[in-house]
Image (cartoon, rainbow, N blue to C red; front, side, top):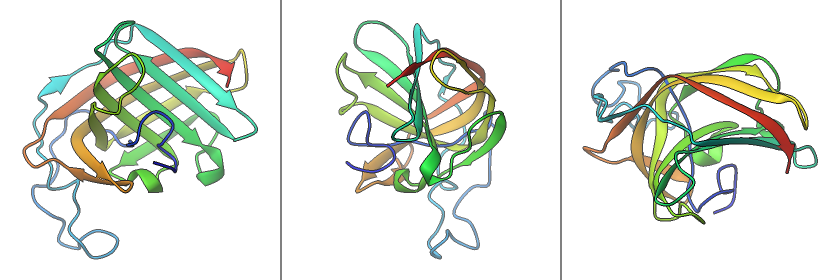
Amino acid sequence: MTGALGRLIPIAVVGLAACQAGPAGPRADGGPDGAPSTADAAPMSCGRTGFAAAEQRAERDDDLDVLFYTGLSSATAPLDRLTVDFYFTLGALDGTQVVDLAFEDPADCHTCVALYRGCSAATCALATVFLPASGLLEVEATGGAGDPFTARLDARLVEVTIEDQHATPVPGGEVWCLEELALSATIDVL
């Protein structure tokens, strides 16, 4: 996969809001192209909660104008991986901010959040993918090499399948809720 979310695996990510139920069924006005909103059709109850990061890292590439945060649940497989990617040339902002995340196709995001369950040590190609349906990402600090990256994430992420960079919630799939999840790492050069 190419595009914003192709850095880790041939799939992608995005969204948040602390386990709040949203409207059931498709939006009356449909999505941007008039089609029903796939995020609104997703289940609302939280089947999984929380994420404990055994390892956190942030990497910045000023040549590509990107910042990547990665949290790993374990040093050994199988492991879960949380990613927050900032693509500044696509519209992500640098510095302190609150990002209101909503369900987006991976090809359309500029501040991209994703959770992968069941990764191997080398890849998440066969992992179950969760993208935000709603939520907030509160970024407290970003910067260059040696600076801290700190943020707080409140999100309701839904299980999705991704094909050609288009995400579709899995009917009856799991929902993973994150509340007040602290993200913190020293930024390295990529």
